[in-house]
Image (tube, rainbow, N blue to C red):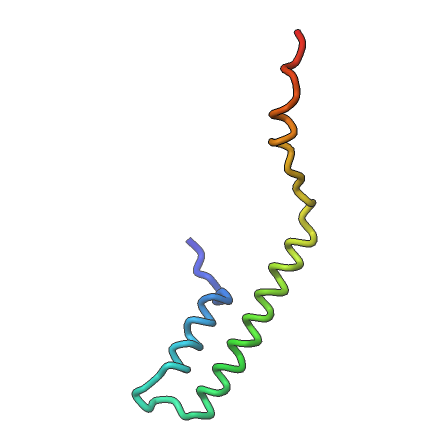
Length: 75
């Protein structure tokens, strides 16, 4: 199996969350602020991707209620 080349957005956000929540002192306040800013950017990117996927998908019409009132097909 081929090894993945890039992290997913969720994996990146998890990594940034670990930096932001660090209490060991490994990361400075500036690092935490940068992680928060980058996480916000990734969240916006993810939301834009969801919106564009929703817009590009054909609209689904809800016909099950209508079909329940139709008579059975004639043979």
